[in-house]
Length: 225
Image (tube, rainbow, N blue to C red):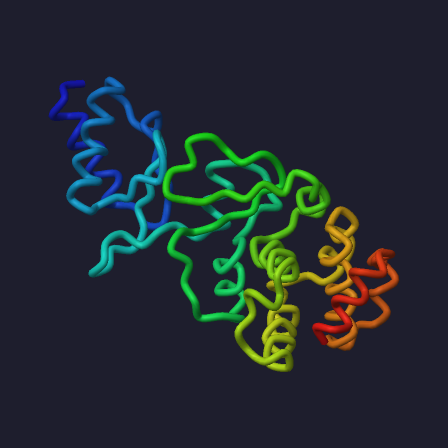
């Protein structure tokens, strides 16, 4: 294929798509011609370059191409399940904060990927149950918020519980899987989850979550309320 033909094919296929990732190997033609065509589309704002060899065609806005959802981004970069928003990105995703992080953060149940691009990846290599239980992004976000509840949640506790309850009611968050995945979470996270389960009216599920043994953890959480 000529360079012009390659450019035409790339542009036609990409512009005809919405909310999907593209890689150079998705197209026929020489790799250089495909890369040049995609680079031109990045400059024109028709696609967003996520990282080397990975592009996103989302919803065009006045501020540029909308970024991919964190969960889909993590799947595309890392692969597998058990990845989801971290930090302020997690609180925002759950509706527990309105603060937008300067840089999207994604927690992955393994090593942080090389060449991460514009995303900040947080390694949760010890949290292997997140992958085993095939947690969804919202479920991962809940664990990430439980790591730093006081620093991330900006709504009153009662409102936070109510919002999480809505996520469990509509099936976005599956408490049974979250409870089982807690096995490989830090003691502070497990203890916060146990208290959250009680607040959600599911005290029977605390039997699944191993309690914290550290007196300092229990004391700190008691003082925090």
